[in-house]
Image (cartoon, rainbow, N blue to C red):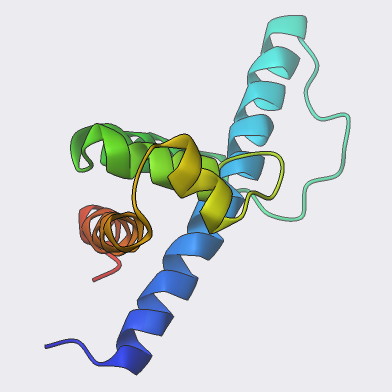
Length: 120
């Protein structure tokens, strides 16, 4: 059984990865755009992590698509992949869920996606 401390650590790790995912998607789109325009590197790069970043994006997308049901995916997308901060009340109201059901689905989504990504 996973302890409450471990649950918090799992949640924090996944949330960090999901927030980084948004930036990585933009990075990969910019990289593709530069390649198509024939531009090498208009900005200095301190790390050469393009392959790892591309792999992370693909695996997060696969995890969202294949490991979560539509309600769980909606919760994760609204809560962590949205450009604006949305509170839990707004999310469970918009999805037509009761508070208890929402938190159960949210916690299950975090656990499933964490498993799919190898975090746990």
